[in-house]
Image (cartoon, rainbow, N blue to C red; front, side):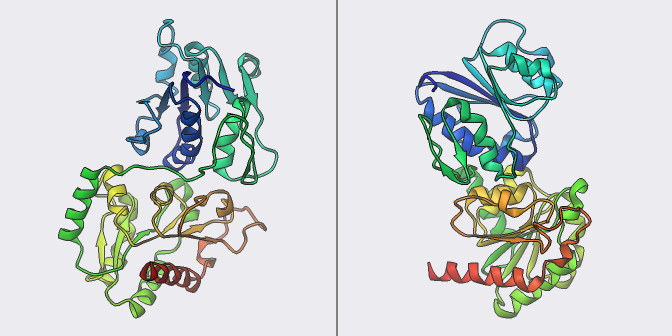
Length: 347
């Protein structure tokens, strides 16, 4: 159990998606300390995804390098700290800054002995949200196979969280009106993951065929190409083939601007990467494509109102990164998109 007025620190230095996957745990933790304060330290380049969330009281940046210089003076101590990941520098800082630390088993045995609670990693694969919730188990929460048995700490809400401000939303609508030809539905396409995970990318040719099949039945459909500069480089064939239907947002905007634009989509179709987690947090109707090495059943957004997960045919058979995403058929993705668009017209 935890006092409702406790001062709690959470450290999560991770990529965009991994940071967002911790938001249900952060929400549950804040619900347990309504009179307390929840401070979150995240990577300076990733903390944008946590801005404006109502359950975070203080949000600041930290890295494993900057952590080495922090916490040596006994002020601003926390009642409790939870550390995600296995960076020893972050755990050592938490030990200096708080009265007790909860963390998963570390590689350094000496650090493990200093933890107030050492949480073992699950022996079997589980959804990433539940994995992050499991760090709260010493506080009275048990999560297993989506069946939660809270004992003083509630986490019934497993939705990812992201907040678009009114100002951001107004800017996105203005940009879309000026840059994208009129027409609906507006469909966002996330073609690329990041360079070290390029095996998760669905071929550009598959996206081009997908556009052709959607336009065949939705002549007024418009497509927005999302992602970073690398994704923008892949966009050339699509822009050339469909100059009146396709617009480019990739590589042009900040993370928060891109998310604000995504919030205006009628449908999102993308591979497994940070923006796909943002789409899940925003509740956008979405088709998410997953490589067999990273099963969607462990990553797709939980309790999402309109998400269709498409896993690689070898999921559960092979976790080799050599499996080709081209094996995911365009017809399956197109059908999922049609199903979600049909739901939208009926609602």
